[in-house]
Length: 182
Length: 147
Ligand SMILES: [Zn+2]
Image 1 (cartoon, rainbow over the protein chains, first blue to last red):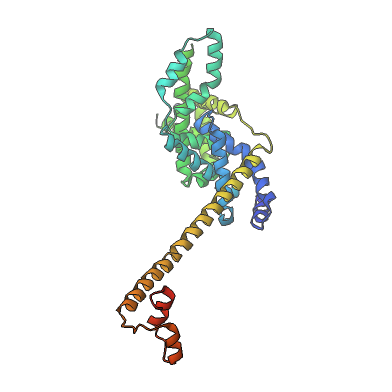
Image 2 (image 1 turned 45 degrees about the vertical axis):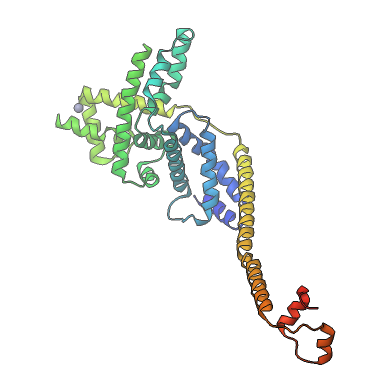
């Protein structure tokens, strides 16, 4: 936390190294939020870039009434939502998933193995975005409910119910996909 | 049944250790005696473990920084170019009235000149006579209508 403030102050004072320290520290965590929210996509890195460009241009006006990481992840979530809105792909196309599962190009074992590896990703993609976001921040990033509430600008009770709903969805999706793979 | 409903509401929080004290003790006790809730708890646990094991991506140390530097420099360059062009167009917009005013003034002068009754005598005669030179005369000399 204090390290981040020090880096921010360095950057504001004109030392670009301050910004670079923040990028190095948070780039992978940011990437994994994006990756978990939209799945493997060639635009994952573009979104991360856009996030840090926004940070670069508005770091001077960053108010220290919340942690830098909270602010950064809020930007990350919002930038990812913008991207999804642009692509009009808020919920993955279920037909595409079923098509990929029932496709028959190669030995069944290979297909099953491959499918199992991406099963979680597919199941995640089918969870409504707001539930998915809360769950990703909890289980991928390891935040507590209070921090998630700050990032998503909502109440702790809302976070709890979103995560609970996400797990119910995910459990249902995984059972459904497992049935396909049996 | 009422207990089961309460546990189901608390299950996810319990899993994340986001409840303590009486609530946590209540859930723990209930899970020991209720198979249905316990099954649900284990399924939630499985989902959580799966999420925790989810593949993580990483970027090479300085990869993003070099991309960002490139973008920031090109954006600054573009912004400078845009501001330079905007400045230029603003300047030209501000300068446009000058030639227009010049043309209008010239036309007015020409009308005045052609309207003035000037006695036709040479410039030498005029200078020798010592009389005052009017604006019309001067302009006439410049424009060649006066000799
Ligand atoms: Zn029960």
